[in-house]
Image (tube, rainbow, N blue to C red; front, side, top):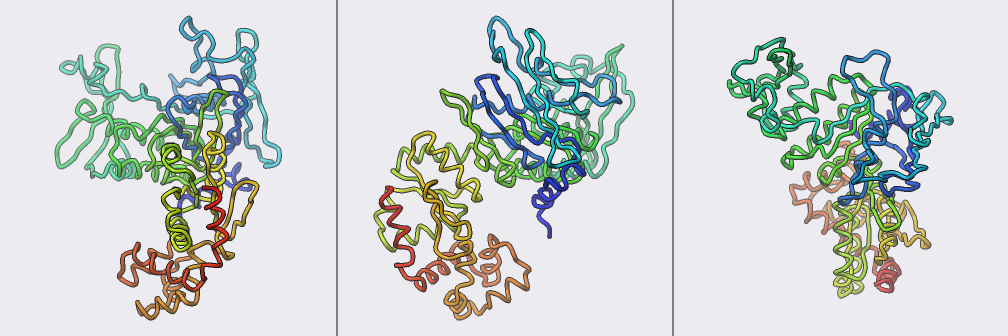
Length: 484
């Protein structure tokens, strides 16, 4: 089965991007907004999940993206296009939300992948200029005030609840109903919007049917109502729209956060939207590929960006850095266990002075070290063997020539041990199960052996290290010892 994240990445490759996504934003450079200066962000995936500690500048980036397009020639009445001034109002309380020479440089895709369109929106005396040459695209902003529960804002359906008239009904397609239910982990019989009117005032009220009972937005929780609204808007919007969403995980339970992230990937695959969302949810970030994740860090001299990391990982790194002398970054849990066992065999006491932290792919590993350097915390990284070392960047590698899982499960001694202990042929099992991604080797083999994955993994690693011999990784452990 094709991984939808990889399928979406292929559609968004530079060779295919314009044909699928049109004049999407490739890159922005932000100068002079809310303490952000010279921050360049490249959109290497159609979804950009921005994380960071509070006040890092997440919302600023999303809001600036919204000001990158003119409204299409044909839009429904009431559609609003966004300008920079909509999000950065100057006042007596905030006299300088941007510098006098503030500007944003947009790069848009064109039919020539080597020649993106460059356009600068900048401040000229009292006005902003640079909008005229912008491409046309529908833009949607789902902030915290876009969906407020009707009961909280005392909307028409509340304060005129006994006297409003019902007007037209807008049905929700079954496919959308299923998607809403899958995210929230519940089954709906029906979803629709009911038009209501009192005098000249008109509104629309979401209605859900479950287990034979009907209830409106007035009796929905915030998470359910906002999810209903958001999915409906993403599905109804024209293909190739831009969405900026503030913390979509708000008021959702843990499983719903993960399912929502999967849905965003799905809707981008189908409708080719570009989505920018801010989040503090590690579950949503984990569901995204590394190229979709961006962490912002604000310091006294400005804001920096780090690809592939989440805010949760950053917080964990910062706190662990105070407790232990050295943080070592690896790509995944398998690599973390392999390095732990290597160190245990050479210098067990060293484990008390270090923390081994899995952070994602090779890009995330490199950026994790850069982040630690920036905040003056001691760190290094051990990458998969196929990536090699870069001592200057404090990037080292495991023994061998392949990723750790391949090195372990392709080792002849490990294969023989698995055959003798579990009665299983490694190569044949992986081939029959069509498992080509090395990250899935342990899960597949452990399931076939009716064994616990953690136990199976540690048995295989220890067999591999026995065969390898301590001298093969002693130099790597010496690097860790000298750094700690």
